[in-house]
Image (tube, rainbow, N blue to C red; front, side, top):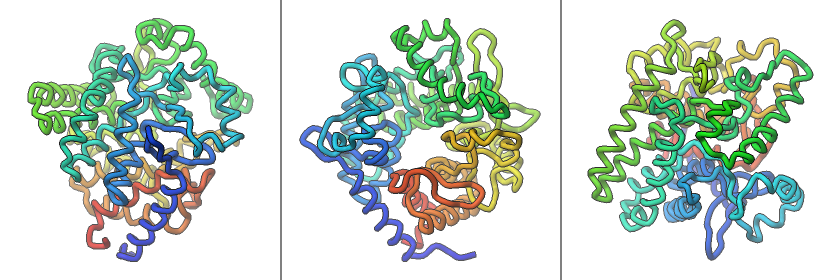
Length: 432
C-alpha cells in the first residue's frame, strides 16, 4: 500500500487553489465560489458549505466570507435557499447557462432565490470555521440567520410529526435522481420510456409546488412527494448538534440545551423509523398518508454514521454488513453511491442521470470518512482517504467519478474534490 506523502498534500492543495480561484466570485456585496463557473454560475447553499470546509485549508478568511455571504441570503420565512442568483461579471458572462436560467426563471422568487432548501451542511461548516478561527465577532454576525434556517427545518418541515425533516422535491436532497426516490416518483429504471418520466418529474413537481406557494402543510396534503430523506436528516442532526456547540460559544446556554436535545431526539427517531432490523440498513421513509420505507441502498444509507448520535449497534451493522462488503460499497474504487448489484437490469438512460448510475461523489466520501473515524474505524477512514486522494490526484477535480474505473466524469474544475484536503488533514496529518 502506497502511503500518502507531503508531495500528495502539496499537489492536492495546488490544484485546489487553481480550481477555487477559477470559480471565485468577489464583489463589494458578496464573496463565494461557484461549484463550476461554466455550468453552475450561482451561489449554492450546500456547495458553499463544502467549499468553506476546503477553504479552511486554503484561506480561512475567505472561508468565513463565503459563509457570511450565504447566511445573508436566508429567506423571510427562515429557509436557506438551495440557489441564489447573484448578478456579477463572473456569472453574467456565461451566456449558455444564463439563457437556460432565463427560461427557468419561474423557479426563483423576486430576489433570485430558489424555493428549494438544501441539506444544511453549511451549519457544520460554520462550526469548523469557528473552531479553527475562534472569531467570535464573525460568529455573532451569522448567528441569528444560522438559527433561523435550522429552526425552519425543525419546525416547518416536521411533516410526519416525528421530529424528522421532510423534503418536498427530490432536488432538496442534493442527490437529484437517487434510486431511493424511484418508487416515490413512479419511475421504473428497467423501462426505456421512463427516461422521459424521470426527466419531466422534477420541473413538473416544481411548478405544482409553486402553485401552492411551497406551503409545507398544503404539500403534505397533496402528498405528491413528501420524504424523510436520509441525507437531509443526517446532515440536519449534525447541523443541530453543531448549533448546540455554537450556541455555547455565543453564550446562549438555553439555545445550546435546546439544540443538543433536538439533535438527540432526531437521532433516536431516525433509529426507530428508518433502521430496518432485518437488513441492518437505514432507508428513507415516504408517503404522508401511508408511511413506508423505500428499501433501496445508496451511500445515503451510510450517513447515520456521520450524525455521531445514532445507535452504536445499528451503526456497527451498517459498517460491517454493508459499508465493508466488497459486493456492496467497499469496492476497488471508493465509495460507490450505488452498489453495482442494485443497478443490474437498469436501462442505459439511467447511467446518464445524476446520482442514478455508477458514480462516486467526494462529498459522500468525506462524510463517511468522518463517520468511520468517529466510530472507531480509523484504519478504514485512512484507507478511504488514501484512495480518494489518489483518485482525485490522478483524474483531477471532477463533479463525480465512475465507480467502475475511477474515471472523472462530466464537469472538470468542480470544487467538491477540495474536501479531500480536509480528509487528509484529519486522517493523514503526518503527510502535511
